[in-house]
Length: 224
Image (cartoon, rainbow, N blue to C red; front, side):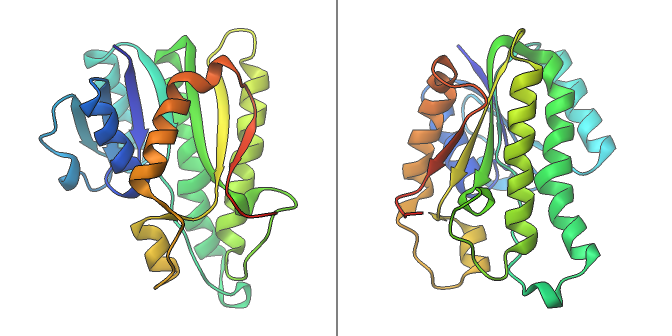
């Protein structure tokens, strides 16, 4: 049975996907700063970590090495969102977004890669806001630009590991109903729920690398 690592597993899409995968019998390693809502679930091993802190990352790397040995799938779902006019932002606010969405994602990937099977699959969760030519929204300069960086990083990693594996793909999401979306856009109702997207994400994580590598898949019903 496959072993799946999911970051940002404490809320929203990450939580829904972790619970779904565990209930289907997969071994799930759920990583999040807050793991209260994923404790005590069969097949789901929850660990509280901060992907921006070196010591926290070292602890989970040591845990994976000692308890799990090999990983089949890594879903980099952890992220933060800031809705703020550019003129009111600052370098500190940009850094906070990039530390999680880009640097934290890159570092946990680098540390876990030695444990991922050659035929494994790394899925990075990005946003339609990071896709060139898509509709853009005021206030999301830090968030969307960080998600654009995730897309380019995914393409580069797929090239670097194309002869050895694992495969790397990125899902660029439109609006999905999550706690983070509600905080950034109070009252907005997305067309897709976390549970609905979790079904798609788990299926893609298990099978997408058979058909794709280094690809950006837009997950949105809007145009562009």
